[in-house]
Each structure stands twice: as C-alpha cells, then as structure tokens.
Image 1: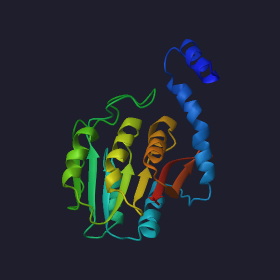
Image 2 (image 1 turned 180 degrees about the horizontal axis):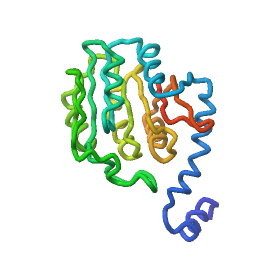
Image 3 (image 1 turned 135 degrees about the horizontal axis):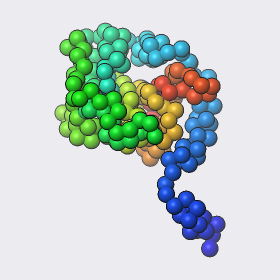
Image 4 (image 1 turned 90 degrees about the vertical axis):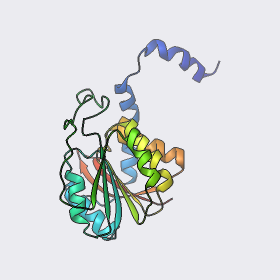
Length: 228
C-alpha cells in the first residue's frame, strides 16, 4: 500500500468532517506565493485609484464591454461608467439583489447583502442590470451577447461557486488583452481558489496589472490582463 493510499484510509478517521478552516490554512501558502511572485505589480491606496489606473493606463480609455458580477448597491459599476465616458461602452451588472445564495464565511451567511430585490438606479443609459442568480441568467444573456470591444470583467461574487461559474461560462468570449478584476481575492477558498482552478483547467495565462494592498502581503482588489 502506498503512502497516499494509507493517508486516504486514515484521514477520514482523523478528519471525519470537511473543514473550511483546514482548507483555508492549506491554501494560504499558495496565496502568499502568488502575491510574492507579483510583488512588483503597481499598487494603489484605494479602489478608486486602482480603477482609474486600469481605465487610464491599461485600457487607455478605449470603449469596453464591462460585465460586473455582484453589484449590490452599484458603487463599482457606477464608478466605472463615470470613469469610462466612451459613448459606445456597454455596462452590464449581474445580481439577484437578494443577497448571497449560500454561506460565504462563518460570519457572512446566506442572505447577506440582501436588497430585497431592489435594483440600484444608475443614471446612465449605457448601464443595464441583469437580475437573478448567475446560474439562471448568464447563459441566456451570452446566447445573444456579441463582443464588440475589449471585455472588462469585475468579479465581486465572493463565493467560490459563483466566481468559478462565471469564469468558465465567459471563457469562450475572453481574448488576449481582456481584463479580469477581483474584489475579494485574498479569501483563499473563494475568488482566489476559483481563479486558480479556472486558470489551471483552461490553460489561461495572466499578468497582474494592479492591486490594492492591505494587511501586509495581502490584497483584496486585484486586476489581471489576459495574456493567453
């Protein structure tokens, strides 16, 4: 019997129930290694500077197809529609506006961020909201969606399941030069794990282009340029 087979037999006895705490601890070294490898990436004090840099220096104010997943009160999509004034840019916000569909952390439970289905108003005709769970709305949306310019994706879904679903569904539409932004990237079992699993499974290559550091080596807000 191999060492691995022995571990398979013993582990259910030692750890009879799956532990998110242990999974988080196990993923933290990968997360730190990832940030260490990108320590020279441009850093900014807050999300506003981060967004502005991406629009001005990475996108260079070109027209964009902006897709946001996890709108909540609309602060991010409102800021992006204000930053990118190009008249042919398109902005789509996806959210159920009824809160998280499942528990995220020990304190952020199902229903957190609930707006009772109320869609925030944004005074910009280029902005469209797509209401409902991503798993119910994204594929129907993509059936009629045709990219006409660079895609910028803002992933603020928090959950591993939601983030991975979005990334894998969007993959056929993503091209070199498109931008992926994450809002809670430092949660090891959430957006970070979804990104790593997607990157590995789809043989995608990325370059980190911007981040907002906090708490030492960590950064929640990060942006990547698709290189392959």
